[in-house]
Structure formats: C-alpha cells, structure tokens
Image (cartoon, rainbow, N blue to C red):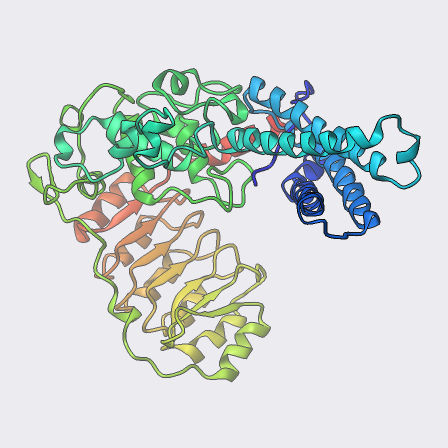
Length: 503
C-alpha cells in the first residue's frame, strides 16, 4: 500500500525535524490498514456465521486503528511539507485520510462498552461508520498511489481485453520506444532516446501528480520550464545543466539524483543525455541531423538492432570482454593476512562465492596510511579491486600496490599520490581502471600511464593535467576513455551553491 500524504503546507522551508518524522508516514500508514480490515472481517464473520468473537477484542482493534490513523494523518502532513504534489489529488487524499481517522474513532466509541450505551442510535450507526472508514481507506490508498507513482499506476499494465472493456486508453507509444531501435541514425533523439531515459529514471518523481521541486520532466514544455530554482537545461552546455550535474554528484550527496536507493542512470544514459544537451537539446531532430562524436557512437549503437551501424560506421556493441583476471583460478587467501587488513580498518570482500578474487576498500578507513600499506602484498594474488580514495595514501603506498600483480581496478581519488608514484604501476598487466580525481598528477604522470597497455578508463577531474598531455596519452592508448569531468570546479560549486540555498 502506498503512503497517503496530507495537504502541503505553505512554509517554504520545513524543518529537518518535520521531514524526519514525516518520512515515517509510509511505515505508520500500514497500521490502520491492517487494523481496520481485521475489524471489518471479524464483524462480517460475526454477521454471516454467527461466530462468537469477543466484543472487547474488536474494540481494542478499533482503538488502535483510530490511533494509528490519526498518527498517519499527522506524519502525512509533515511529509507533505516537502512539497511537489499535485494539489487536487493531495486535497482529496487529505480529506479521505482525515475521514478514515474520524470514522474509526466513531466506530470505536460506539463499540466501547462504557461509551457506546451513552450514544443515541449508536447500534444503528456502528456498521455504517465502520463501512465508511474501510471505503475511505481504500480511496485514500488509491490517491496515495497516484501521488507517489502517477495516476495510471494501477492500470498502466492492464492487459487486453480488460483494457478495452474498462475503457482504459491504449498504452502510450513512449513505452514501446524503450525497445531496441531498428535504425539508430533515423531515430528521433528526444522521443526515442532521451524521453525513455527520463521515463525510466526520473519521471516517477517529476510528473503531473508529483513534481518534486516543482519540476516536471514528462514533456518538452515542462523540461524547458525548469524547477522552482530555475532552468535545469542549458542548451549546448551540459556542464551548466542541472539535469546532468545532479546525476554526477556522489550518491551520498543530498542533491544527487535519482536519490540513493533508487535505480541509478548508467554511464551510457548519462553520456547520451550529455551529448543531447551539448548538441542543443533539440526536441524534433534525428540522430543523423546531429554531430555524432566517436565517444558517443558506442552508446548509440547499443540502442539499435541494426548491427551497430552509426553514422555509416560499424561500431562494436554489447558489453566489453570480461577481464581474464576475474575468472582465473587463484589460491585461497591467507586468513591471517585478511585479518591484518581488517584490523587496519579496511573492508575485505570476495567478488564471488565460487572464486578467491578480493575487493579491498578503505571506505571506513580514511586514516589509512603508507605504513599500513605494507600488508597489501600479503594478498598479492587475490586483490583485484583496491579502493584507497580519500585516504592518507601517497607514493610509498603505490610501491606496495605494484606487487598486486592481478589488480584490475584502482581508486586513488583525493589522495597524496604524484607523478613519481605512478611509475610503480607500469608492471600491472591487468590494470584497466584508474581513478586519479583530485590528485596532484600532471602531464608527466600521464606519460607513465602510457605503458599500461590494458588500461581502459582513467578519471582525471581536478588534476593538473593539460589538454596536450591528455592528447599524448590518447595517442599512445587510442582505446582509452579519459574522463575529465564536467569542468574544473563546476560540480563542487554547484553542490555548494545548492547547499547554501537550502539553508
């Protein structure tokens, strides 16, 4: 059962306490549902089969249904302070929720052994009150589903012939557009590529019934309109478009979208949105009418069924070949070595139950230092993923990392490593992924990376490299993907600005 949310308050900035308690609404709202339905079923059983159920038992159930319905109203109101809901649906939902609480209290009072006899015509009003409470409960649940998931949430997958018999319109063509495209070059960029991405990841919270931050993404007009904070789309400038920026923030950031816990956009989806915006964010053009760079061709080719032909060029589709290091047979890790790393605060996790490859992460060990890195080579064969981002690691740590001969992924973002340390990575034959975001690496360090032949992805945001250095590395490793971010400090500045605005 989806949560019901009461009328949105006018306060522009609700307190953290209000929103904190408001988010308990989805939990509390299930209590009156259960209590009222149980009370109704017990009374129905008494009427039809003359079963002897204790009157006190039903009175107790009705009491807690009334209490929990009242709490759900309060918490629902607090949740509504966050805004972003269609007003008419929210209004209906509000009064239906209040009605559930009121009639639950009435039914309880009539049923109560001391209060009931004092109520005139009480026995005549009891069953109508209980019945109205249950009917309003069902109505409020439906409106809650509409607020949270859209008005067609219950009916969107209704099959034929029931769809026609119920008078439900045919499914939107946009749903079919998410299917593979026969000829990508002739595909309408917005209708067949961009809109399906937004529909699968964003429109659930930004639609006519629910428009968080007063933003709707269900039509070109609404996208152009933007949110309560202004435009989310700057044609030709993805680095200034909030629509892309929020997707690239760390998932733990309050402004990251989709919110943590929701299905996130894939790298291809973000790349396609970025390409579309940089090409002017057109709503009426085909792929063939836009400039298709080499970097976006694989993402476009993956959408089609035409053999990966984009712009007259055959592009490889499907997932990249799996690294051999992920499937090779490795000896079991030394338990003492694992325990030593755990004592240093590192997480040591197997990549699968069947194999001995390990991931080692310092996500909970920000003070991890060069002195502790000497324990890493004790698992030189088993460590294939190593995450040392945001730690005290420096070039001395990389001297130890160099002994991890099966290493495939290495995170060094926001560490003290320099060009000198990168020399240690030359002899890692399986290294494919390297994150150097926020380090002091320069063009000299990039020259050291040129010798890592299997390197496929490098992150260089906010480093000291130049365009010339990147070009030289691309020349040495033509298949390498180099991610420079949206701009020098655009993401950090955006997050800071939004945080200040929210206070």
